[in-house]
Length: 299
Image 1 (spheres, rainbow, N blue to C red):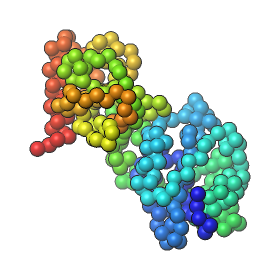
Image 2 (image 1 turned 90 degrees about the vertical axis):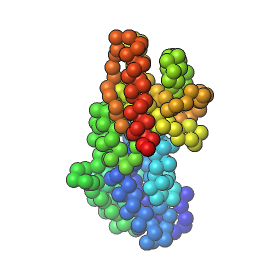
Image 3 (image 1 turned 60 degrees about the vertical axis):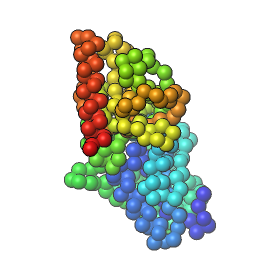
Image 4 (image 1 turned 45 degrees about the horizontal axis):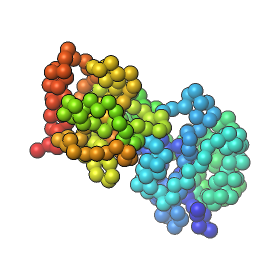
């Protein structure tokens, strides 16, 4: 995994790889370049809370594949995904350091957030890590995650998405919030109305933004399409299942079923609504598509 001279490690869950995470990664990259060593981002899957306190496990801001993509894009040479299970949860801080960080990854420098906790019952801290580093020959840097006057936080981003404020969430993430999944068959009602949609099925437990209509992007097969996105249960037709569907602007010729897809959220246009009849719905859909076009394809 690393060369015989060791590596610089940056350790964390990194859910969403938000601005604070990227500050840690930038420092890790700087130290790796200064030492002439590979830079390894060390993350965990599943989220440790899903094993330690399953009832409090947070919804995800990125799949592990997307997280890996983001970590590599933020400067890591290697992404090392630790499978978090009961065995790892039971390790003492000292056992985790010795087995994973020293013996396997050959740490020479470690960068973490200042509130980083690890080991059984979260007994490990930056101070414990630094103490072991003095004994075992690696340096430790603990950084605060503060940006633009407030602390960067995955919890804060989840709250913003729950409110439908995808613009503010994007500011914290440093990118548009996205959900990955597979395009599956829905009710085909959009096609009947002249707005065929790609219905996204996901396998993990992502944060789904508040119900409503959004402007955004649908990426399939490496092609990124401007889209109007609907989130909700479709109460106009007595729907029960919460769905995320994307209509590619001005396209009714796409056959996307079975393809992997990513939906990115740019702006919330409105909340979920019901109408007296189909005519009212059609007028609103046309207005929504027009607003999406103006936002995504200006000029």
